[in-house]
Length: 188
Image (cartoon, rainbow, N blue to C red; front, side, top):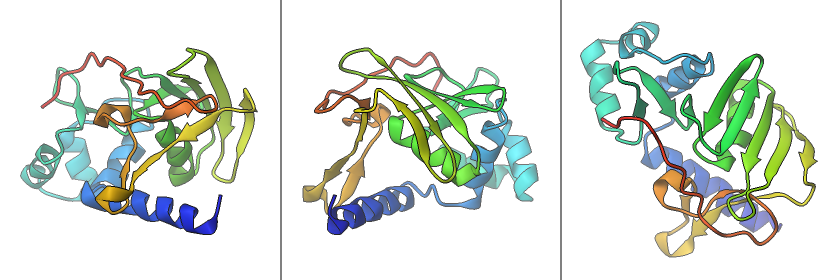
């Protein structure tokens, strides 16, 4: 891939994170708590951040994409406790990701290794790999790919996750279909 294409993807990823205000301490802390494999109470998040609960709740309400359990605890923000087509084994914990791209980025961001199993949205075949903070290992089948869609008309806006109605996923060569997993979780 040409350097300019890589730069465009990197810029689009950064713009997406900034647009959704996902580069804050709050979301960093939320992911660090979710990786422990348990729902995260907003009170715990506020406490860890040394912030007022009302302030934290206001920020969370501005993000309708977040997933909650029946008790109002956070269970998903890219990394999720809700089963999806993208599973990560981190130490002894089973976690999931909203999209294939997340399975590649969270292990790096969190400095952890993860065993990833993803389902191809086209063939239904399982795809396996190990993601470490430094590299991807043991990709099976070897021809599997991650598809990212960069909308040039939207000035480099990156459309990635199936939950955002976009084409994505670890898929076999030339696969461009959308995975539309069903969620059994209440939205706020």
